[in-house]
Amino acid sequence: MRPTNLWSWEGKVGRGTYLGVGASALAIKFAVDWLVTTKLFLRPWGLWFYWRPFGLVQGVWEIWPGNEKFALTMLAVALPFIWLGVTMTMKRLRDAGQPVWLVCLFFVPIINGIFFGFLCLIPAALGEIQKEAAPWPGPRALDRWIPQSALGSAVLSVGLTTLLGLGFAVAGTEIVKTYGWGLFVALPFCLGMFAVLLHSYHSPKSFGDCMKVALLPIAVLGIVLVALAIEGIICILMAAPLAIALAAAGGALGYGIQSAHWSRKGAPALLSVALLLTPFSMGLEQTVKPQASTFVVNSAIEVNAPPEAVWKEVVAFAEIPPPKEMLFRAGVAYPIRAEITGRGPGAVRRCEFSTGAFVEPIEVWDEPHLLRFGVTANPAPLNELSPYGHIQPAHLHGYFESHQGQFLLTELPGDRTRLEGTTWYSHTMWPQAYWHLWSDYIIHQIHMRVLEHIKREVEASPSRN
Image 1 (cartoon, rainbow, N blue to C red):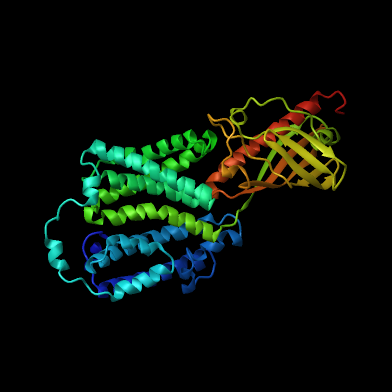
Image 2 (tube, rainbow, N blue to C red; image 1 turned 180 degrees about the vertical axis):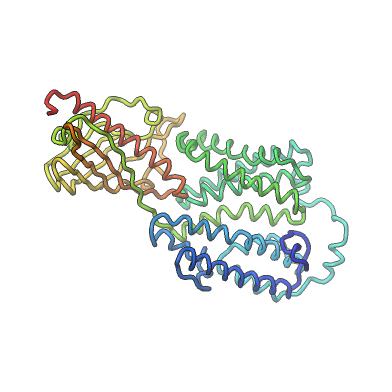
């Protein structure tokens, strides 16, 4: 076998070649993983980590916050080995006369090791060489089921992909109850790839056609989720940029496969891989249970009044007029007023929002410089915008939590005060690198609504000095 043939989906390999390539790939991958992990990220690495899904990724969020780079680097390193493993396994299955869809076992931890040993032992099937040279035997189930016309295959592809996406989305949010990599990364990527592979089953399609078929199911799925009251418009719009980008990436991969390596004989395996990666990712994520990072948002404003005058409004402020910002008018929770019971550490502050109240026991009372408080109750982060009025998706409860907050007052020259608001929070929606951009922006807008209200009230008060 020439090295260039290793990456092709076509052909067969015997037991010896499969064992040799597999052992060599494992040795090379271990060396690369060891170098990346120990030299670049300064962490330990050993063969035993391969017996756990994704090796050390299980502990990434427990070591220190912001370790997404490690997980993404290890995934990028693994991609060529995954491709090689899938292609070699498909060729070994053909040689052994086994169904090529069994390549899906390559992605199952622990089982894949047993599966590899099985394929290294099972002999070649008798008569397979003669069968391989024979003409295509005629229509199979997929041949009869998938329309020959470009329009028919496109309609089937978009419709079926949307239904599958709906099923996976409901299963992920209602059964597995995770809003993470499986839902927001694997699902749109696999839907894009599946749609293109299905559309191009009978003949290769242009890149433009592939992109249309890859992106349409994502748009239709978003509309269906809103129409069935499963999700609201706000969350669909927030997830859209990530979903569109990943669906396009999956569609591009599907285009590359169908234009270079596509064969109807490999269609069941490839379509199965595209489908099974999503539930596998969701199940793996449920097993691993990555730990949420804590994020910090800090906002500041200058007030033309001394700290003593500002402090009174910081502790408890009167009702803020209704918001004009489109973000809050669309349903994102916004602060209305703040009340306090007691004085000093142990007092309880209630910050009323449009969706409920944050209960904030005071931890530090350093008048008129620092007010720090914990958070023991979190209301829903938003009222979902929906044609059905009030809906309650699972992510509205327990997926976003504020842990602590504070107001810091710094005296400035000229009887002025720098007022800073800070919030410490976490959320269990992945990839965190994407979702915390949204949450940081929203929390900053909440901060500014409060800070600007305090500034107006203090500066308008005749007793501010």
